[in-house]
Image (tube, rainbow, N blue to C red; front, side, top):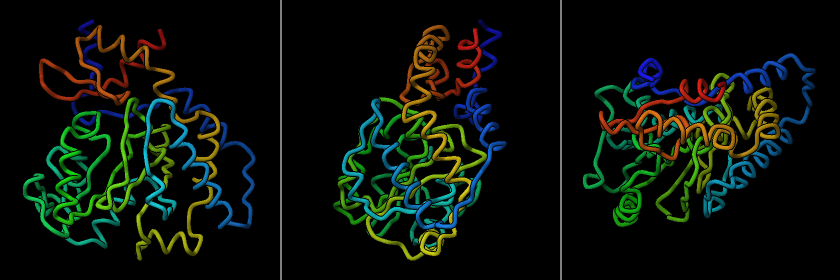
Length: 282
């Protein structure tokens, strides 16, 4: 078992991907791909299917997502994050947030605590939060403070499709936007595609690209096929029992994210993708 412990990922834990997903992607890439002429219709169809995919989860529950009524296609959640940094002022994050923010902005990144948030701050918050594999434990308090101080919240939902037992309500007027994608949810990191939800239309690159049908048709087509093939809760339906076994066998605490567990001895999250595939294959 100690040899298998070497498969635990303490540095940059990887989201799920496996041979079944790769084989299906390969079959799509080599299939006949008809490019239609009505890009607006393609975009609207993808958004409708994607929205249904989110809400059809049997393992999770998102409430009042429809309050963020403006929807745009995005090339993964990263495009959404980049635009927030580009067009919004006073952008900030909490400690232990997605490391991408630090890799891009380094010492220029504004890192705050809930207590130091101020009016007109634009806080990006992952849900689920990467350090916990769950909703941030202070999320309810964060929303309360945001409502009291007029702080704008932007929800990074890129891990949503990897999780179970997530329940979240988007009704707070402080939640101005959210984004989800299939990158981690269905193993499409190299063909990323998703949807951004906003309470009001944003005048930025993403909105303009959608207005003028500049979305990437092939990525939407791949996304639709993956949704049809694998559904809303694929990773937990396939690997859920193996995940429980891995956590018990290696003395790890469960999180709500299929690819992350909690190492009690080191008090930190650890990636379990390699172990899941090793035990599942056996």
